[in-house]
Image (cartoon, rainbow, N blue to C red):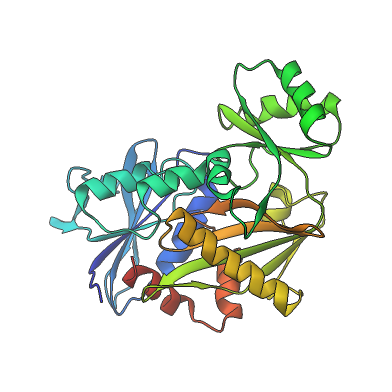
Length: 338
């Protein structure tokens, strides 16, 4: 068993998801085992990393006000608090989006030899790009991928629209290849809407994926490693009050997240098994969530979330509760198996 003393929970990000990331990071920090670890919360955005709160074993949390937040020393991943230098020996990454989900932060920690909670740098980079990730998955025999077209900023969008009509059928989803929380995503029902949707996606990323819409039930499942074995949490079905599971449905209460999903035991087992197979296929570690559409034609893979949301209302904590597990105990498993 690994033994760590000073855990840094890193949240905030350089992306549109930075506020969601803060909520995830604060929740995670509050659930870490206070009998085992000293927990330090780091807000990191646009290259400035500051200690915003800390909690030593068995003590109360100490929040630090603006103007009194020490900077993190990136040369050795440490901080000086009240004259005491604290070197972090583990990082719990809760940065949604760049740079915590695309491999950059992982690469920094790998160079310093500091263990962390998520997939490694290479796997994070592949998984973060929706098109690249699907390229690793589309030829397997245990899950399907919806047809898609890759678009880069500067491409002739009228030619792209013609290719969509030739290769796909409406409705389609236009998504930034590297992003989350449905930022920059549009469901497009006709050619007249397509070009504006692609330009909107470019506000989040220089590349976009135009993906065939699949009719079915939206399911999600998380996988993780425990004692060398890849395991799955219970499946959730997402039922949106909106036309699809957009930002408003995710964060403003316009969806129902049914856990465990009211599906057959056979389908539930298949989704859990598929999540484990994708986890191994990509070479994941830590906690990873996979999203799917279950249609009449089979299970379609949508994307991987290597830093899934971790607020009290997020999907993974609901899965953990449905599995009858304590959140603190579950986080101990993630840490000790990193």
